Length: 464
Image (tube, rainbow, N blue to C red; front, side, top):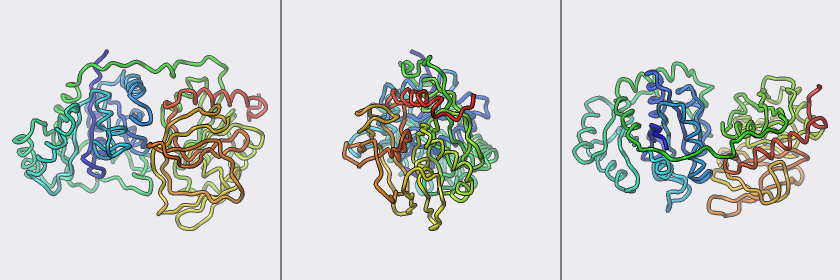
């Protein structure tokens, strides 16, 4: 048991500004010299990229539905051990999760799993005393949850904040910790999958501005006091992170603006199983590194279709790697890259690697979104029949097949209802639309590394 100072930042709903508030607090605490560890509730990759830029440390995802309480605690304890304070950004509204009638997958569930106090973010732009009714409702909805503080976003002036503060203090015991002004430079632009990635921002200026705003109008002493008010936290590191002492293999991880969605825990699971990770860019590199497997994560290949198509050398190298029996694991954007072409939102078609006989067609009104359970229906590089793992889908593309496609996995949603098949398979290539979190099934890291080991010599690009 150890005390890990920690605070969950939750919103009354999506869109109230909890990401802006989280980033402002992360940047301000870092400016104060704190070692602050960020976390994100839910499966989102994009907010986590901003956390890393603001805090200077990789952000970790915690999820009640994908991972469960024991694994959430394990990831938290392992990651927060050397931090002075941990800030955990929630998702959607405080009580929203995988179901409208239970707390599973919600920020509230995660806060209770970690025994963490909650800082509630409210859009205060068009209210005064009504804010007290809102705070009181959220604070008393679940007696097992501690809503300890409230932060107002989009406040017009200090005078406006004083009205809100007085209302809260008169009607509740929740502590007002300050506000953020209605300030356009604080906004982060978004697009079809959410906010623009941190790597695409003028990040130094953005996070400096956010931190400065927090230092001016947020009581950071109270923020830190709330984080230190939590109790001791039981928990131990998952045995899935014990090092495998088999022969090391090399896995090439696609990393650039087109392929940038990776859970740090997935990469660490591969390393723990005996992999050395080597990054490469399908956008700008023209040869593959000497590797035994490729990992093509999600991202935005549809936004970089022209450049990916022009890099014929890389497309050819990846296809040849697969044809020689090389192992490839791909997710979402990576799957799209392995098709014959991507048809983008503007109606342009861009040639891709061509391993799978299909085109990935972007459609603005064809969003696929939700938690998923993936179960192997035939042996593949994820494992044997019946191996299951959890993850999520979030994409606007659909596959238009030129000939029948072969799948290796059955797919179901958070309610257990069938969502068809996933896991396109050819040879030692497996491509999923689902983004898996490997901590939901510790066998996956080992299975992928074993597939890489089996490919060495016969399937590797190594020359020595």
